[in-house]
Image (tube, rainbow, N blue to C red; front, side):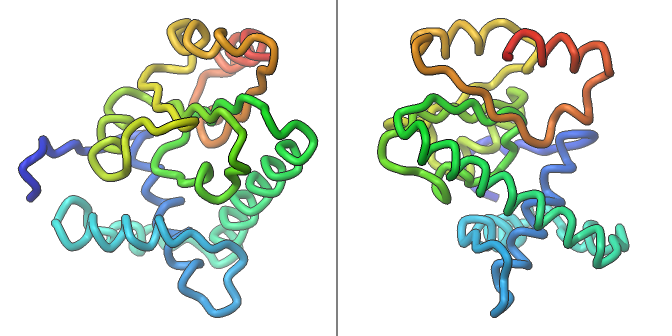
Length: 184
């Protein structure tokens, strides 16, 4: 184990490892629909240091169709982000429910101001495994239902955008509606 504090995931937060694993597996195919070398490296790192046993994911027995849907959804979110950034190159993007996704690296245009947002314990793990805050890529550890992240990104009021992925299904319907109203 590394000397840094071990951060573990459980419950809803643990589901981020499914998409991470599937992106890594897909990236290694010669005909890959998505290339995410960061996911490949993270799965290897987390397996090698005993942080997570990815055989748990293999035990889920996801159908090939379900795996394909997850990969296609990731591919589409990348495409949406790239298309949006072509139209608004200096936009601000808030990647809600980012988990260990490396979308910033896949779509960075050199101008976007990017905020990765997830629960505090997920962001602690992200800081431990990936780079921390960088120029134009900021990490926010809080719930999407808290106002703290809105206050942080409000400094860019003239160019806001919101890009959610992977978290709204976990919110109760009313909370999701409230969150959607707050960020629209």
